[in-house]
Each structure stands twice: as structure tokens, then as C-alpha cells.
Image 1 (cartoon, rainbow, N blue to C red):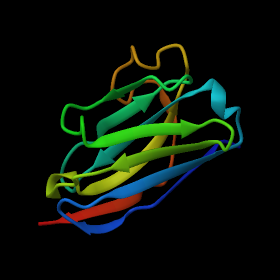
Image 2: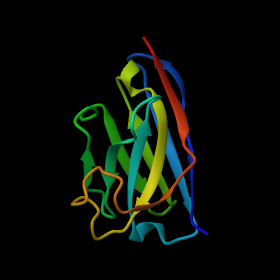
Image 3: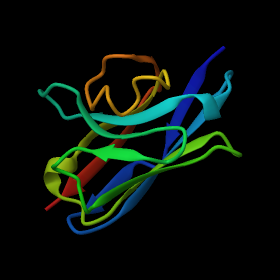
Image 4: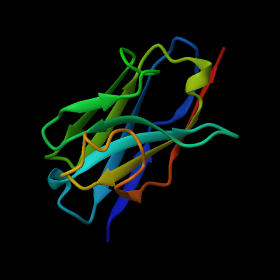
Length: 126
């Protein structure tokens, strides 16, 4: 069955970096769009970045220039390199799968994402 497993979260000071990973199992990974989302305590979940099968990507304005989404189709993995972290980046980070057709045109909303990982916690202290 489809399974997404995140890793790489942790606690860092503001200005630091983390690299999140998401391992995908149970489907043909290269055929699907992937995304990263985050949810801070007391806030709604928000889209962070989306990447299509070919590597084209879309970012939330709040992370542009600091975060980079990438994928390795040979290893069925998704990554999120997070640099210059800020306290407001704190939250639970989730990877998710979306069908290929509406990948980037679907934007950063959760519509079309059908499978989600369990999340990995990122905490940024000031």
C-alpha cells in the first residue's frame, strides 16, 4: 500500500538549516506530483512547496529563497532543504502525494493530495 515516511526534523536555532526527507513506498513514485506542508500549533495547515515529476517547483512566498524542494525518482525520495530558518518556520512538516495532471496548476492548497505521511517536527528557537 502507499506509504510516505518523513524524517530529518529536529530543533535548531534561528539561522540554522535542516534537510527533511520523505521516503515513498507502494506506488510508481516518478508518476506523481509531491508536496511539503506544515502546521504550526493553533494554525491551519499550509502548503510549503510542490514539485512535479520533472523537477519544476512552486513555493510559498514565506519560504522562497530559503527552502528548496527536490526529488530523486531513482530512490523514491523527496527532500526539503531549509536554510535561514526562522522561529515562524516551527511546526509539523508533512509530505504528500498528488496526481500529476494538476500538479503545479493546483497550487499550494491541499486539494488533490491523497496520501500523507505522519509528519516530522521542526522547532526553530530564537
